[in-house]
Image 1 (tube, rainbow, N blue to C red):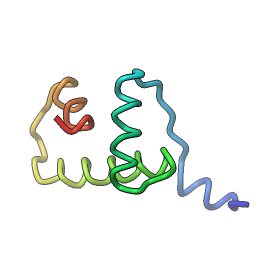
Image 2: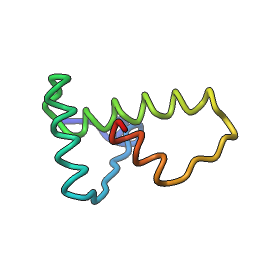
Image 3: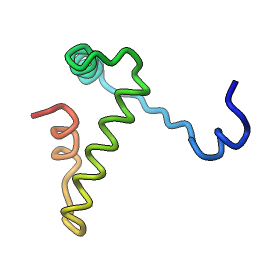
Length: 72
């Protein structure tokens, strides 16, 4: 079982997503051999946030961010 320190260093995040987006996420996970949604979302966020650091200060619309997560 994780320790109290682990929980402090790893905050839980939750969100409701559309059925369509969830289906795309499951396909993305299967293509990469990822079995847990939490692992998939961690990978997506790390890749997206590290990539966005290159473009610091550039504002993107919500539609652009969703498209990036959907792989469009």
